[in-house]
Image 1 (cartoon, helix red, strand yellow):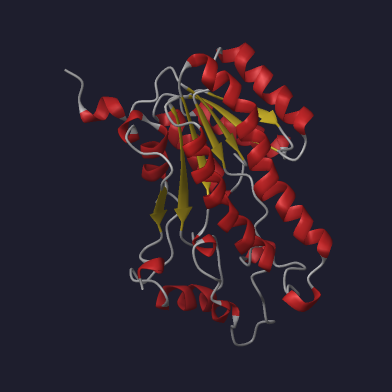
Image 2 (cartoon, rainbow, N blue to C red):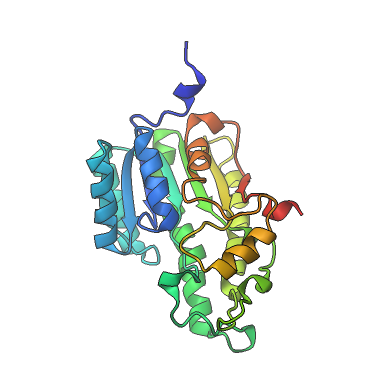
Length: 274
C-alpha cells in the first residue's frame, strides 16, 4: 500500500528549473533531484548552471545544465526540445528566473538609485521581459508536451512584495546609503499571481496544475542593520534560512499536492499575517 512518502517521490519525473543557478533555484534543483527527479538546471549563466549540476551529480543524484534565455523564444524552444529528446517528457516546470534587485554584500553596486520618479524605462521593461514574459514563454513551451503526456505541474515563484507593497523602511540603515526596492519588482511579482490563476483555470480538466510559491526574505549575507529591520517586521523574528522553501517546492511539484491548483503557497515567517 502506498504511503505518504510515496506521494513525495519524484522518481522517473523530469523537472526544469529556470534560474536554476540562482539563490533559491539551486535549492529547488537540489531538492527535486534528491527526491528522484531528472533535473535540468536551466540558467542564463551556463557556467553557474554547470557548477550546480556538477554538485548535484556529485551527491549521487541526476542533473544536467542547459543554458537558456527566458526572454528568447528560440532559446526556450531549444531547451524544451532537448529535454523531450533526452528524457521523453516534461513533468515539472519551476519558473524561478527573475530580475530581483539585491542588497546583500555581494550585490552592492548601482542598486541604490531606484526612486520611482526617475526609474529608467529600460529597467522597467527588462523586468517585465524576464519576470513576466519569460514566465509566459516558458509555460507556453512546456504546455504542449504536458498536454501530450496527459499531466504536468507548473510552479511560479512569486514574492511577498507581490502580495503587499515593499516596506521601504527596511532599507533605511544608519551609516549606509539610502536604498529603495524598485517598482518593477512588486508589479511583476503581483502579475505572477494573476498569470498563475489564469493558467490554472485555463487548463481545468486537463490535468495540468499551476500554483505559485511565495517565499519570504531569505538570508544571504545581508547587513546586520537590514536583518534586524526585517526580523522586527516578521512574526517569527528572523529571515528564512536558505533551505526553508525546499519542503514547499517538493510539495507543489509532487503528487502530495494533487488537489491543489490556482493557489499560492506562502512561506514567509508570518510577514503577511499582520
